[in-house]
Length: 367
Image (tube, rainbow, N blue to C red; front, side, top):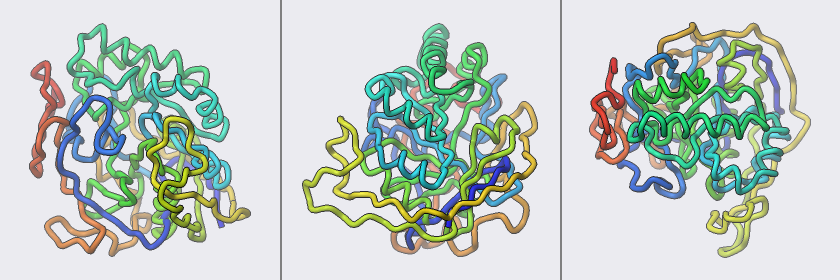
């Protein structure tokens, strides 16, 4: 059964028995992609005290209900099955889209928007913003805002490529009309859910996924994880704007797809997605939907929303899913320590490594 709740928080769901918490390590190697078409990762997170000048930076949001937020980055591999899941389970998903990727499949992003998705800024072509001149920073940020305004308005959220920002990036974003730099503190990757916190997934978390081949199956697995932990999926844009939220709740696990024979094409993948995993999504059952209205919980204006602002007692993820820092993870699951490592550097626990900074302010605390 799927329940749709209107509130102003975040959301989580559980998929099959795959309960996973994971630790992140090595940095990205290229400007186009990280690992298998993923360009952002938990290991790139800066300290929560890193400044973006006048712009608020959010890693999670304070919430009153046990909910989380789903975000999907880049856009090189659109997937029709994801839209079907959004429509069937009323999932409020925000995508941080690269303009060049969006231009390859304009009809798909129109469908995504009509299915209730929000399209926000991930620059023109995914550069390290701190390495650019001020004029180039502004162009990379403002041009996609104009382009994406045909899908939804306003476009006022930025996810900097590789999580790379500093005060100059924040000022350029602010001058362009951006209100929030949206980071993340959980990641679904290769069918494993990783969290920045040793406590595991918690209410208010912003979860990172990527438009990669097989995204629909990863999304199904994530939804089952959320369902098992009694977490709902809420609308990030509504939460940031202090509006009543639409929240989707799944009451029963969703059926996972069966693997296809090796070499079989996967339904739903658009052109350019030829290397997707050999799996096929089967959407779950229908008729499980409810709606409720809850007064919005608005983050206080200004400043940085740091990880750890969780919902009141009773709304966090059920115990037993997190592996304490320094503990031993069960097979298929790990915990992510508070690494704040920038791309291009090997990560050490508790350190902040900037990616070949072009100035002395790149992602430094208080910069």
